[in-house]
Length: 323
Image 1: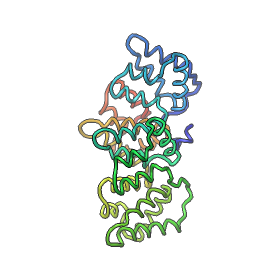
Image 2 (image 1 turned 30 degrees about the horizontal axis):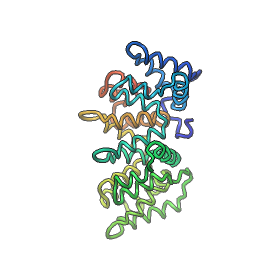
Image 3 (image 1 turned 60 degrees about the horizontal axis):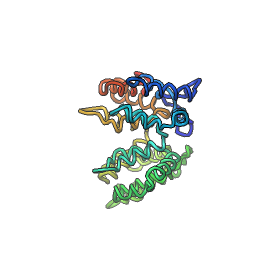
Image 4 (image 1 turned 90 degrees about the horizontal axis):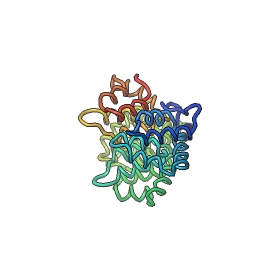
């Protein structure tokens, strides 16, 4: 399963000697007991991969005629409940729900939209779009269209289409050409040709963009980030800067998002849960390393000082270790 969802730099791996029926029964006992045995739930759900959890969900339904997520919702509360439900949700459905939440209610959480759409592979995006339609009977593109506008909307729709090139091969000649196009679209003209930025930044592979940004620096004597900041504004600017950050170092981008979620007054649990759960089988080890490198303390210690109770315990188990 791990291969579909990216790297092998996760903190959660297949549990050896896994038995869905044994786990389903232990979970049922933990939920039905007098007072829920949270420790049992935490140790089972954080030590199984998502693919294994889906087998537990199926077994639970077959044995007890109930949806595990409904039983968890009925029995747990607060951020702990949300985190446990997230763990038993298939990745594409989880991301679809995160996108829906980002667009629901008063105001749109643009940063969450940007984060999900810039950090998922084309393959993931296609699965997310499918899950979105299955759950909400509306297309992801339609919802993005009605909640956003202008160049920001155009770029988000391009990303949501899942058409970014995924190849790891990089063509130096094309990178030079793209760098020149970006230069001509921004620094080298009166006014900015936003469409060119969208086209290149939303469709080219990340390794290709990394090289393109190096070439850009040679041509314009400045970093692409500085050009974007000088030429563009608003959420469109935020989105393009996120793409640049991801192309250069995606784990560092996600470490910065976690740092933001954990610093200052109050915790942004929406972001914290999403990154911890969605990257736990992909690159959470790299995110931890970047966190430590950039902020001088470990992600583990940041979670410890900012959260409490069973919620804290679960996050620390997903985190997997103190750096």
